[in-house]
Amino acid sequence: MMEEKSSAVAVSERIDKSAMAEWEARCEHWIARLPAADAAHDLAHVQRVVVNARRFAEAEGADLAVVLPAAWLHDCVAVCKGSKLRSMASRLSADKAVQLLRDWGYPEKYLAAIRHAIEAHSWSAGITPQTLEAQVVQDADRIDSMGAIGVARAILVGGALGRALYHPDDPLCEQRRPDDKEYTLDHFFSKLLTLKDGFHTAAARTEAQKRHDFMQQYLATLKAEVM
Ligand SMILES: [Fe+2]
Ligand SMILES: [Fe+2]
Image 1: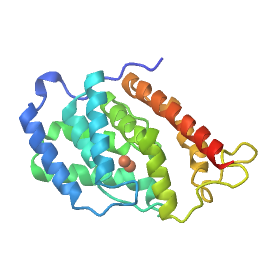
Image 2: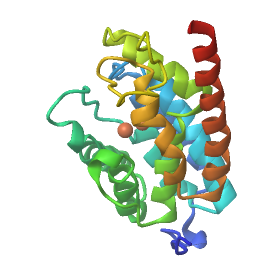
Image 3: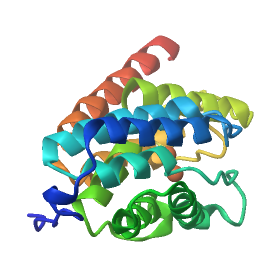
């Protein structure tokens, strides 16, 4: 059993709904001007992460004043796949997000928790989420790699990098080790089908199981069609 994480900010200090909507609009406006880092990391990805972060936060009782700015700004510094700075991307985004929010006059008391939620969102950063809010943001980002949208994003990225869709003799890696630098479908076996057990919140775990089942069904159908 995972131990209960404490909510980062007390209920009495929460920002009201209409003020929060204005802060969100400000974050979205800023993010919308950025060029997409790659085919799977565009404004629509950020919008989906926000939708799921809000859903998981409401289900779990996490503080939206931390979760929503963190979700909007979680990828605010784009680092290309393959860049040496890739593993630092979430730290760079956390620094930039705090700087932006401070410049805009966002209440200072939330900034440390927002910084932690952004820093900890990506696995490559190797930082364990210490708060419920950071768990929600990580879950919301990760769930976007699964299900129908996960399939579509994997194929978009593989296509943009010029990879073949699948190994012609063994599309589902049944007799070989996955090589996702060569074959897009191999990314399911090296990563996407392993994600389901790494979620923190109950709300995300339920959704992850559905998306996992869909991906398995998709792969089985694809194999039946091409073999
Ligand atoms: Fe990210
Ligand atoms: Fe992301």
